[in-house]
Picture 1: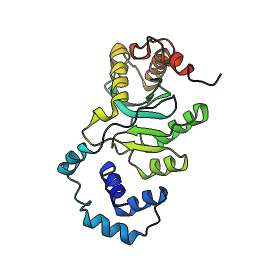
Picture 2: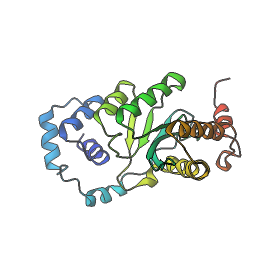
Picture 3: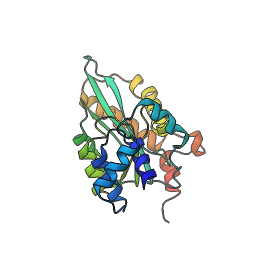
Length: 228
């Protein structure tokens, strides 16, 4: 249990011992908070500095590769600007196996509540994955998203700060998104940005072949694994 406590503390460095205790309880560990506090102090987990994160690199590798669509998604934010200079954010989500994008949500500035609302809409249409990989942005580490994920039986897998390579699927997707969409269009308003980005997402899913998928589109590749 002490090892698992350390793993959780390294993966979620902003959490104190009380919330780590809750996570352990969710995993089935029958232990009281006093013992967690003692182990927490003995391991000096309250000193989560960069040196400890670097040392963790030897024990934390990339998440296991998914074997079918819908097992693991990744999400992130991309920032761009309208013609009048106002910045906006796009919440990008990609299926790590099929490379399909279930969602790109556009807003002036995204909150954790808007992230939840967007994922809830996708849940009603496509269902939710077992795991969502993301960075340690404030919208993703909020208590609201943590509670929502627990209620929907989704595990949030946080990469280490400063290690975007641990979220390589979304980094690759965001690169294509910026090169093929954001850098190729001008956006007059949020509504205009939403329309053009959604059109790109549909084309990306249904018409854009990928060399890593044997030159199939993400939709074609995913359809191969659907029940007949």
